[in-house]
Length: 192
Image (cartoon, rainbow, N blue to C red; front, side, top):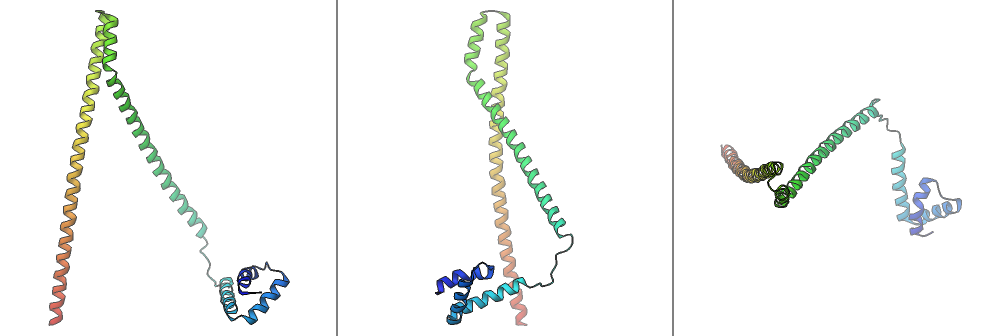
């Protein structure tokens, strides 16, 4: 048996999977090869150490504690998933509403034209025409409001980020100055 075959057989030997012929060849190779013999001894010591009973026993409630921890982690994951799903449902609802409003605004002229042509002076057609005009005005004003709100939030966000960056820079500068003062005090006290 050569070194490569010996290396391949070593784990089989420890697992008890080899046959008598291979085992005899392996033992013979270990008698003649110093490197394989040293590696075998190191592995044998490691396996013996691992199989020893070192007297360390887990606490009696170890499994129950682990299962409680897993359950609590699972609950946190479920809550996070539920919150994410609710947020996605709201986002989808808002997106659908926005798309519907865009559709209505886009079709405004065609709808108003067809209502005015259909009635040609009818009281019901005129009332419907005015109701739709008011509705379109509300939708248009709502979009203007949301656009203005988005602009305000965007501007506010930029100011908040800029203020936070300035605070961090000031804190870093103060800490660096404090560190220099402390080193100066230490060097002065070392001179006394």
